[in-house]
Image 1: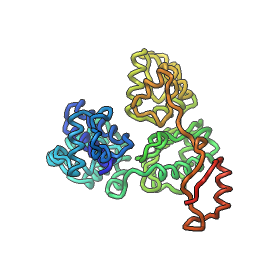
Image 2 (image 1 turned 180 degrees about the vertical axis):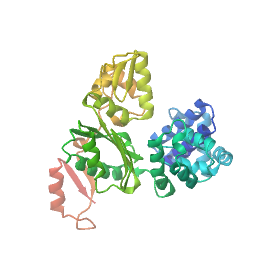
Image 3 (image 1 turned 30 degrees about the vertical axis):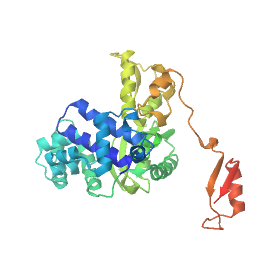
Image 4 (image 1 turned 90 degrees about the horizontal axis):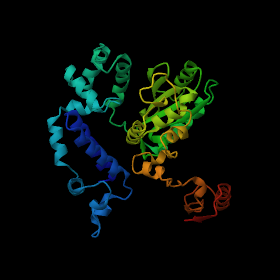
Length: 377
């Protein structure tokens, strides 16, 4: 069983506990467990199989979690999860596959509507019954209706980063052809360099949002529009992935880019820090708490946002609330590896075996990329 599979199980446990209304700290414990396991580079099986190693040596893993890891690696199952699944109606699992529907919203839907299948939810949306519920509305109802087909397809899941990267690059190239686009950036888990990407978030600076949205919807790889608004439009793109496009003002671009890059845990910690300083941070900028004049203290750039709360700018790849705040405070943030740091490649093929380029072509390409050495294997 891989680390990712174990993390997924802990996330599933957290979802079911939250649906049941369990203690918020218990739910958070399993969310944190999923995040911890997902972030461990070394396979957990290697740690377990080493005679001089223990799960307890890993930061954030206590006795209870260590025992559950042992159980999962030994049997591939977690008795606690099986019990939870027996206590929750099966339709709940289907509803949670609908993008945008978390445990709390699913619980409200189940309590307010007689749902036994995704089809029942689809009918409820078509009849306008979902939009009448507190916290939903017509746009949310439309979004749910568009996402139901996605949830019904078992092949739809998170994309690998490189798959999402291809889509991001194509879409940014397309959007730059629109004269109304003054600036465009990608955010979310793609920007943080996560192994997998669930959806794609794009931010555009523009004074003509309608033109931007028209151009966005005209992209040839758009499967269909999920929802269109004045400043946000969502589509279903290649591989069924959802793409959200937001148009923001120049004065708030940095704040929005920071906010929609995440992660959720990082942003919660950042807002908490701001509050202690008498400040408030959201996607529009940094303001004083309880101020009424709407004055934005920082927001044009990410660096300004972090500086407002006494921090150095934190690279997106580190924004997971795993010690980056302490490092930033102390001026000890690491310098991340870039392509220019790579000196050579020790695994290359040529036409002598199953490669597509000759030795001379490979050598020339290596020189063009600034490499000092290569090894043909």
